[in-house]
Amino acid sequence: MRQLLNFFVICKFALKYDAPLILTGYNYIIKVRVLIRRFTMEKIVVSIQNGLLAEAISQMLTESGDFLPFRIPVGDKKADLVDSCVMLQANILLSEVSYGSGTGVKVRLKEARELRTKLPECKIVFLCDENSSPDIAREIMLAKKAGSINAFFYSSVTAKYLLAALASL
Image 1: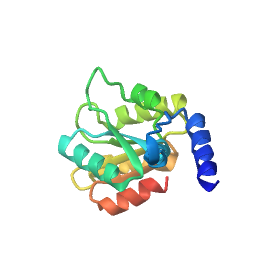
Image 2 (image 1 turned 180 degrees about the vertical axis):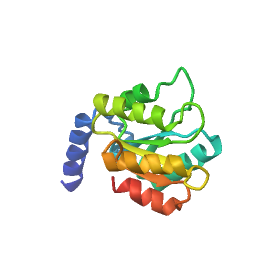
Image 3 (image 1 turned 45 degrees about the horizontal axis):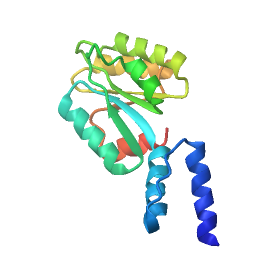
C-alpha cells in the first residue's frame, strides 16, 4: 500500500511539473526521483568570459547537486544573455564583470535591468576581480547597495563559500 501511495505522489509531481514519467519495471521510482531532483534544482546561467574559469565554476555547481548550470558564451551574437535566461527560466544569473568587451559594468547593469523586467524572480549575481580592477569592484558594490543586483562576489572567494552563498539566495 505504501509503495502505491508513493507512486501516486510521484505521478502527481510529474504531472505538476510536466515531467515525463518513465516506468521500467522495478526501478521506476528511482528514475522518477532522478527526474524530480532535476526539476527541483536551481537553474543558474553562467556568463563568464574566461573559458577555464567558466568551466570550473559550471563543474563545481554541477557536482554540488543543487544547481543545473547553463553556460552562455560572452560576446556571442547568437546567444543573447537576457533572452537565454528567460527561455531557460533561470533562477540565478552569475555574470562576470570586467574590462573585456561585453562584460563592462554598464553593459552588465543594462542586462540586469532588462532581465528584471522580463524575469523578475531571477536573482542577479555579479563576479569580479577586486585586485586587478578595484574601480569595477566599487561600482558593483554601489550597484548592490542601490538594489540593481541581488549579490556580488569577488573572484578570490573559495568554492565552498560561493556555493553556500548561491544556495542561500
